[in-house]
Structure formats: structure tokens, C-alpha cells
Amino acid sequence: EDFKGKPLPLSAAILAGGLTGFCYWLSCYPMDVIKNRIQAAPDSRVPLYRNWRHAAQHIRRTDGWRGFAVGFVPCVLRAFPANAAAFLGFELAMRLLPE
Image (cartoon, rainbow, N blue to C red; front, side):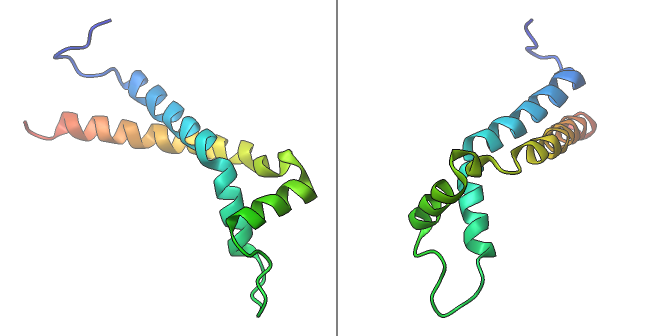
């Protein structure tokens, strides 16, 4: 359907926002796991991880490939409604603002 000149249906904005949040986390979640492991490592004179590659190798060795997906489901369950609400808020604001 062509929406040229017509406002986007709110249901489409909600779906687009939710799917955007899902796709975002799907694309970068493993890197976020590595970042979180590095940040959560105890402070000491000798760091637990030398760099991000060392942290990734440690995760794979200790937890396998599944280690890169720990916590993905709760993250996506939170991301879908959060991003859907953001897109909905944007669409509503654009409708309420004068042209």
C-alpha cells in the first residue's frame, strides 16, 4: 500500500520500532557481551583480559559459542517494546507538531 502524503498507521510504527530494536541487538549482541565481560572484570594490577579479542577467546573457551548469547532473550524482550514506544512517540509528536 502506498502511504505517500498520508501518515503512517500507528500499528506500522509500533511494528517497525519493535523490529528495529530486535535487529539492532541481533547484529551487535555478541560484541556487547564481550564489552560487559571486560567492564565486569575485577580491578587488579594485571587485567583479566588483555584486549577484546582475548576476552572473546576466553568466552568461547569457557562457555562455548552459546556464551555470546547469554541474556539475549531478556534483552530482546525489553528492546521490542522500548523501541516500539520510541517510534510511536516520534510518530505522535510529528502529527502534533505544526508543519
